[in-house]
Amino acid sequence: MLTRRQLLARAAVASQASLLSNVNAWAALQTQLLQRAIPASGQMIPVIGSGSSGNFDVFPDTPEYAQMREVLEVFFGHGASVIDTSPNYSNSDAAIGQLLSEGGWRERTFLATKIAADSRAAAEKQWLRTEQRLRTDKVELLQIHNLRAWRKTLPVARELKAAGKTRYVGITHYRNHAHDDLVQIMRAEPLDFIQINYSVNSPEAAEKVLPMARDKGIAVMINRAFDDGRLFRAVKGKALPAWSAEANVKTWAQMFLKFAISHPAVTVVIPATSRPDRQADNLQGGIGPLLTDTQQQELIQMFG
Ligand SMILES: NC(=O)c1ccc[n+]([C@@H]2O[C@H](COP(=O)([O-])OP(=O)(O)OC[C@H]3O[C@@H](n4cnc5c(N)ncnc54)[C@H](OP(=O)(O)O)[C@@H]3O)[C@@H](O)[C@H]2O)c1
Image (cartoon, rainbow, N blue to C red; front, side, top):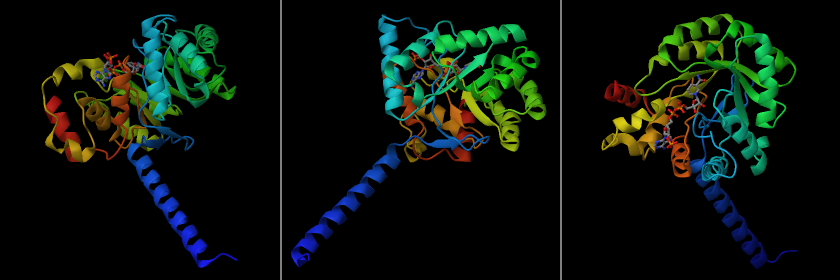
């Protein structure tokens, strides 16, 4: 039988533990990347991922390669997982394959790549090379790059899905002039994902592409959220809007990413950086409140 003193001591420990666990839960909430569901499956993925065009075009035993390892350490350290690549990005897919393998990160990665080929035979051959270079026998997402020969290559992606080589299939583009074609394909073809450009200075995807994705239950990956870096030149010396702190936004990078994820159709945005400090900055864009409609409109006006 416990004495009164023992009972009181246990109660104090229990209440301290519960206080601590509440504090920890609260702290986790403040620092956790938001997640969104992929409509086709309900699988949750973090809203900030990583692109790989240029930044991952590195070779082992170089300072640039070591720097990309640091970028990935920050990336996975913050709970991010989505990486987008392509056989078209020079050495990027091979570097990513090697870095993920060396870091033991493959299991934690939602790996998206592409088919960029003009025929069925070329697409099939390219997939075999992709497996080798990414050092994996399956990916999470396989996309038709820039809609290239999509009538011939989308069926190959679907066959690879049926064979368990990819969990999801999608199509990509990065220019406004392709939006109408993208919408037509979305209307006609079953797709799990689309990838498209959407940014404060190029918000046209919100006109037809993003509403169509919502209607059809297609996940959306956003590229060019920084307009390939041009937006940083546009904001040089420019102060953030007065309401930024309300949205937990401390830098322009966080603002541009928060703009992208504030659209309800968007599942994930994939900024590309070669710098660990910028990776940490970008990931902060996926935490805390989203922008209101008024705040989003103000940004569009500012950069239009
Ligand atoms: N058709 C397609 O499928 C398609 C087309 C385009 C893009 N994509 C995908 O989308 C990804 C993103 O697009 P993107 O690479 O064209 O351009 P982006 O992400 O809009 O911009 C990348 C540029 O922003 C700079 N940057 C990144 N974070 C920064 C920060 N926090 N502060 C200041 N500068 C920062 C980078 O420079 P540093 O490296 O020096 O940081 C780089 O110059 C691509 O990498 C690719 O995976 C796909």
